[in-house]
Length: 200
Image (cartoon, rainbow, N blue to C red; front, side, top):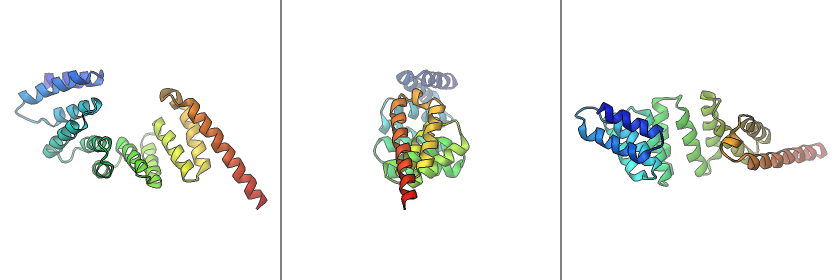
């Protein structure tokens, strides 16, 4: 099993997802012992292939064998979210965070789920937790900036979006010009707000 598991992980890291599924399926056929890792990685590969139902099945099977596997709850939450089961995904991210309260990706992914439900304050809180764990997570600054703008925190939004651009996030995620345009809008809104306060 170990050879096929290693091959599957190697294919997964190289973004050869179909080959990863095949190698990990071979690993599962040959083993008589612990299959949790093979199921977990195959679930991730299925997710990258867009087969979220099969991914969900693999994560369920992995968690049936190891109910304390925080990463598997996080990935199952992703599969649920991509299937449109956003409220169910919140439960899985919550389980991941109960098991590992420093799970940066679970905080970030739960923020995406909260955002999809229009729960912007909750999403902003989770992004702050994610950034406390990993201040280099550029996309969390971008998302928190847009959420803070919606929540009326213009100073916070501008600071987050400026940091996102300084970190190179706009180039990495190909939204530099859109983020610059949003920053200009937010700065104008902030200026107008200050003018109105002076007049009041």
